[in-house]
Length: 196
Ligand SMILES: CC(C)(COP(=O)(O)OP(=O)(O)OC[C@H]1O[C@@H](n2cnc3c(N)ncnc32)[C@H](O)[C@@H]1OP(=O)(O)O)[C@@H](O)C(=O)NCCC(=O)NCCS
Image (cartoon, rainbow, N blue to C red; front, top):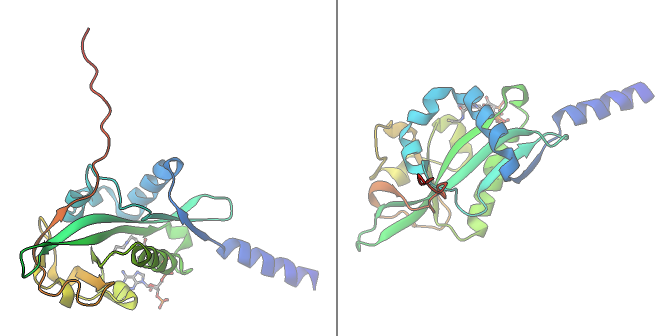
């Protein structure tokens, strides 16, 4: 009996994870994870143009941690304008990505837990819609489809069938058309050193 309990405990310890807010001490681990999961090409994506030099939307940089606190998954969301609406006003929204899970921990529901936590937090904070560029067969399970993004474009090359949206408020993207524009707060630059 003790051996069975030990193996059950070991199974849960191996598969346990928590979802948490990212903190500054997670940055190196997160970047290493993204390099491993997506390779250096990740920095050339059109989505990156909307993220570069910006901070993520408030409260929307999440990590998954193993029981020792190590980062084993990451997702961040970014403030954008999703084109303009029929009356000419801009349409604030979020761009999700990158989402990645350490390959030693895939298939345990961590990606799904990060997605559900991110969507829930975005809703709680009053956001109207989330857009992303990714594999539809994965993201459709969370309610992301191409139809609501049909009249929007990324600021660079993208594949239309991978450009997906989820409305958090009904009709938020109705009539929205045009290019996504970054609206997030800018990263603080280190002050330039002046020559004496
Ligand atoms: C995609 C990713 C985040 C999924 O993380 P995960 O923790 O393994 O996901 P979950 O455990 O919640 O879900 C696993 C399920 O998603 C499916 N899945 C994973 N990637 C998929 C994809 N690209 N397309 C369709 N289904 C996919 C798995 O087959 C599995 O299906 P099942 O539940 O029917 O067995 C992870 O594989 C990853 O980091 N991949 C590399 C980076 C990447 O591709 N990021 C997303 C950009 S599109």
